[in-house]
Amino acid sequence: MSVPAGPSVIGLKRSFGFGDRLGLATPGHISALGGHGFAPYFAQQSIREMSRTGRTPEEVMRDAAQAIEKERWAGEWGSDADHLQTREDVFRTAAAGFTMFTIDPSVHVVNRAAEMGPEELERAAASVAESSGTPLEDVLGLYLGKAHEIGDGEVLTFKERTDLIRGFVKYYGALVFARQMHGWIAEACAGRPFEVELSVDETLVPTSPLEHLFVGLELKRLGVGIVSLAPRFIGDFEKGIDYKGDLKVFESHYRRHALIASYCGPYKLSIHSGSDKFSIYPIAGRLSGELLHVKTAGTSYLEALRVVCRAAPGLFAEIAAFCRGRYEKDRASYHVSASLSGIPERIEAKDMEKHYLDTDCGRQIMHVTFGSVLLQGKDSKGASFRELLLDCLRRQDSLYREVLQKHLGRHLRCLSQG
Image 1 (tube, helix red, strand yellow):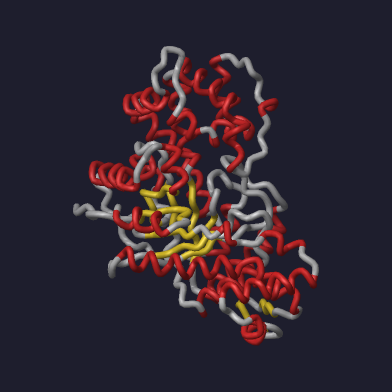
Image 2 (image 1 turned 60 degrees about the horizontal axis):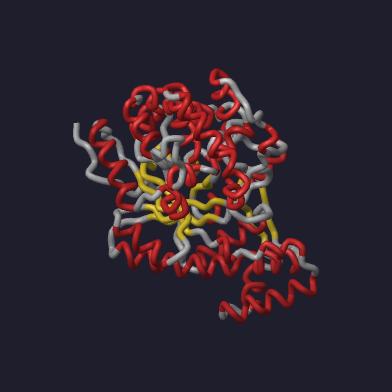
């Protein structure tokens, strides 16, 4: 049985991203795949996560590749350099051998466009047009009043000038940035195959179907080829817990997004903060078919903590206390709603797993503090939490594989039920 030498370009196959913040989860991820028909991205980590875990792009790739070789995994696998925002990020991750590059243009998205009145929108549109060198009238001529039959009997039309201008103001700076990043990715990869994802999910307001249509059509016009796009879906995609929102409304919106992805690309819809969104998985699996990508990261870290909780409860108790002290600061860059008051300060050892790893509140507290745990945390004797945690996982490698297979396997089963 031959083992692939490295990651490959996955393309338009339904796929699943297994983020690994500790570098020890790949065996469990392989076990979780089963026969569910998803192509895996075993090496997936964002620049932000790398900085918070003290890992380099080379280490992320090395840890995944060594585990794949040891496990004798014979299938294709991808690698995702997630949430890239600079030329330096692109060249660093390309040099390490990543095959997919996720562009994060969130700082160029104008969230305020959603609340602007007509006059303010016109002024903002004029400014965007001038800074981008794109005449507003050219954009209006391309899209205003034009009907698009996106499939399944659905027709979307930019009927109102204000609606089109709102999408232009909100997203055009991000599209120009995406074109620039795409050029850097092509340069950094120097002729070898690569694929690009565009992520606009980390924004304050949902991406409407009309806005998605505008983004998809403009990407094509600007020559920015993508394999997947992550809109900001309706509802709440908080870290580490299930979807919050009306499932019928979500399904209605998601259906249109899936049709638009097929019409403008085809490219895959990508679900970010995809960990533990069990209630929407059957919907996404059914409506997207092959054109689906799901990203997970923190959920594998939480399963690592589950191993620690079972195998070294004293260590887990110290980590949990440390996380409580860090939560209010560390939550700032994450979409979470948990409150420290939701978890009792004093919990018996036998109830630690239930409170911290099986409730929404506990999961979010433990989820967003991972960087502080790994880079700063120490136990009562001054030993590094990071080294203690890694040592525990290496000694409990069978248990870590078991909990990952169960938890991530549930993700893939639910996605396949659609």
